[in-house]
Image (cartoon, rainbow, N blue to C red; front, side, top):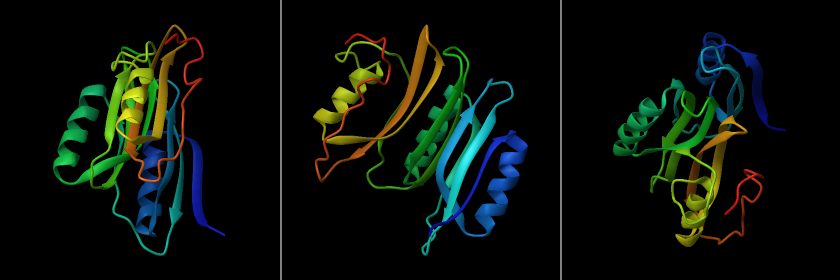
Length: 175
């Protein structure tokens, strides 16, 4: 049985305290969610203790521009995102992210709209591009609302050529 610790409905300060305590005991993120209003979000997380500790760096509160800056900085250091979570509106999102050493750095996008599969500014377009590059959707987050849904996602190499799709990521989308 896996050695895990988990929580939900926690404020950012509670989340950070739980994360710090778990990390000092050898736990690392397996899952992370952020939800509720961007002005006072809630967190849910699952952390696991494995025989071999993997280095992780995480940020619980990032604006869209901070997320991009963090991605660029961490990628330059050989760290890529393994988890991205988001809440808030399309115009005021808040992101949480977990990075760990990776090579290559995964294809990562945020602020994606819903729409045509030929538009790389959409989740459908990025999924199509990723598939054509032999990548697999590893993690996705939805935020915004039904009239203006937005997405953040991470695609990783797919050497075993696992078949996948994300149909229904936005049921109202036409593409």
